[in-house]
Amino acid sequence: RRLVESLLSPAVQVPEPACVAEVAPRLTSEEVEQIFIDHVPGVKKFLYRGHAGQHSLKYMAAVYSDGWRAFRGTPLHDHLTRLMRVIVHHGRDHPAEAAPRLREVADAFKDCQAVQARVVEQVGLRILGVSADFKGLVTQLIGEYKALALRMLAAERLAQGLAKDRDAAPTHYENRLTADIGPSIGADAADVRRAVLDDHAAKRFRRLAGPDAAEAVARCRQLFDLDALLGALVAEVNREVAKAPQQSLAAQFLRWVDETLALKHAVLDEVAFARADIDAPLAFCVLEVLYRGAPDAPAGERFRNVAIDDLFGNPVNEQLADWTPRNSSEASPSAALAAALPATGARPLPGTASAPRSSWASSAPSTTRSSLGAGPRCCLAAAAA
Image (tube, rainbow, N blue to C red; front, side, top):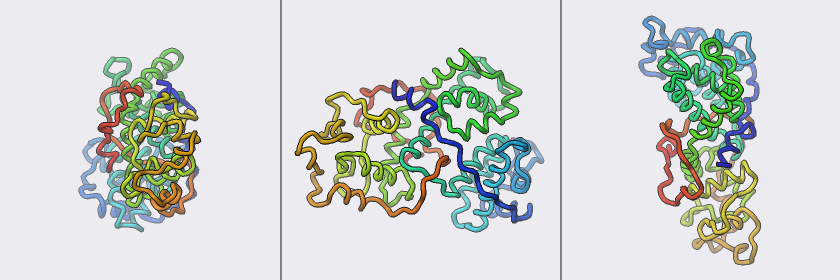
């Protein structure tokens, strides 16, 4: 409970991304459309919100050239327009890897401008390689589950008749909630900024304030799926580093371990030392260290027969100080970590957007430390991909 309150607070938030440098339009509308046609099968038939005759292709070309009408006159207009151009130019210059990203954007243009802007910002920043350290990447992952909790809260309030939305996908009501209570739970700053500028949300829905807002914040914390977050974190961290991107959670976790843990070997797999091998209870402790300063583990809690306090602190005796896994007789902890880690030249920058790592859940968990067993790790399919 205390961990969830810490995670869903203004202190744990992905900051707004840095300004994107000027990107001039280099292509005609016909050339922009052709890039999507070449990489997204069936895109010629994509319709804006299913309206006959309103083809998504022409809207994508118009946004590339002039941006979104909904954001004109706001600080977001140039930022988002430049990111759309980054995506299109990347599609032209790197055709071998362009299809998934262009498909993601094309699908977004079937929906409203709020959805389009969110996806373009996420995809554009990924292409630019904006990166973060381990804590920053975990904060991004937490942000995804905050967004999930807000979506669940929106669906619940609509079902209860606390608001009415004529849209099948209640994006604008979700933005209303994000604008009103997002800052209180530390929702991603970019999401809050876009939500505040959502004119439809402002006109169609009553603003939450005072006791209503406080009640919504409390309910959002109840809906936050800590079990799923821990499962996704375990799945990401335990990936084989050699097969993971340099700025992945798996690689950054091992760097964080080298800087943070007293007994570094304890988190490596005991066969090849090629990856981390942690479970949900240890992931819980990692979150406590990152966002509460220290693990709040009971005195008897252990990981691989090592007390949690010894793992994260200074070993209290020589046996612990010299501890290594059974299959390690020669490599030092730092050497094993160095061997597992790929070389990296990326520089950390704030505000990374990341692809979703899990499917949206439909029920609220009730997570306590005692409920986190060492059995199945609730690894979601999308998290493990």
